[in-house]
Length: 122
Image (cartoon, rainbow, N blue to C red; front, side, top):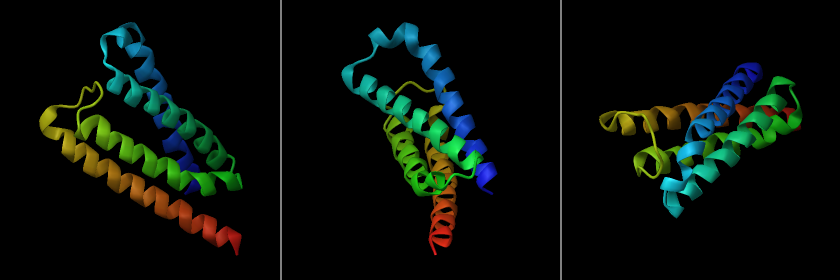
């Protein structure tokens, strides 16, 4: 299961990198709040890559930091899509469905990692 969650985080971090690469030419057009949200997504994307690599290698740090990365990413997605604070290609009628589905995914991932971390700590 850690291998799968690590792969998911690695894929998310990589997709964040591709997303920001596509935005680089247009960053000057965005206001300060949007740039702050984009910068926060870059930080979360980097953390997703690091934690994903830790989980992929079954390092104990992955289960310790993983829940925070999952839930932090979900909170940030709520601001990005739900409050429309960053550019997105998600159809507006589907944004809350996407946010809800992502929260479900993040909560399950965080719960599995927290349970695994507690079990390993015994």
